[in-house]
Amino acid sequence: MTYRLKTILFLFIAFSFFTSTAQKDKNTTIYQYATINALMEGGFDGDMTLAALQKKGTFGIGTFNELDGEMIGFDNHFYQIKSDGKAYAVVPSQKTPFAVVTNFSKDQTFSSTQTLDLKKLYALLDSLSPNKNLYVGYKIKVKCQTIKTRSVSKQTKPYPLMVDAVKKQSVFEMQTISGTLVGFRFPEYMKGLNVPGYHFHFLSDDKKSGGHVLDLSASNLEIEIDFMDDFELHIPNNENFNRLNLTKTKAEDLEKVEK
Picture 1 (cartoon, one colour):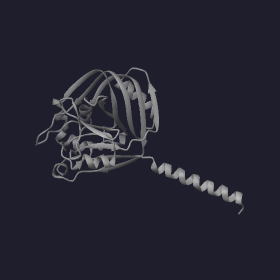
Picture 2 (picture 1 turned 90 degrees about the horizontal axis):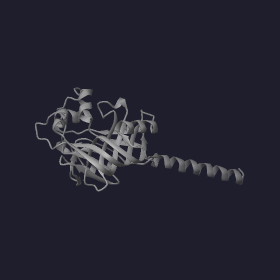
Picture 3 (picture 1 turned 90 degrees about the vertical axis):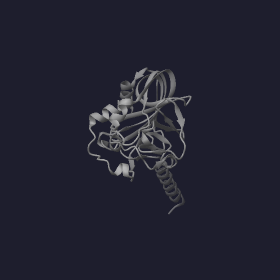
Picture 4 (picture 1 turned 180 degrees about the horizontal axis):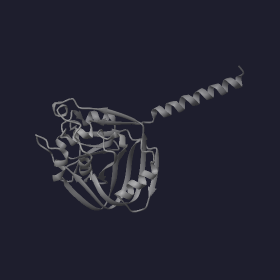
């Protein structure tokens, strides 16, 4: 083998190794604790601490034991938006009955100066991420003319169904506020495990307010998108979860809870 051929072969192997390593280093996994059907049926007790959850991902959304508020996490920090509308930094010992996290790694970015409501935002995201069979994470910086969010108050046993718990939800309408949307889009085939379509939570730039997003009018969007093709599910093993009938949830009830 000539020196030149050896050199070419070495460079080819090195390039293949570094390409393979880069591909392996790119996170493509969504981690989920429990199922949306369990939450819908009153599965409000989890065994997963925030300390353990953050080892699985530093970006995501969810809720807290006893359905005590909305969870949002990004930039390695997690917050709890309680029923008073205020955001609180979480502590490692807090537990969750349902959460979805990943180690966010942007694959695509896009900026828009258009003023969009929630439906138009979803349409824009559909155009940017047309493959609806992948899991997709979104981190979006926004300037909101208005944004409507909600949170749910802490529940007591015997736990109600989620559709009944949200009848007493707290709704907040904020004006002229900047912040970050964190959310995911799940495929239709994930029915029962997660919410098909979009699901966003919001946190203001001053880290004082937020919640589950119901509607908005926003502009100056800075969109980051993470495409993922791997899904890891961990289910609780406790009395609350084990007694649930996970075949009962109706699509219309899920629609009421999310909207």
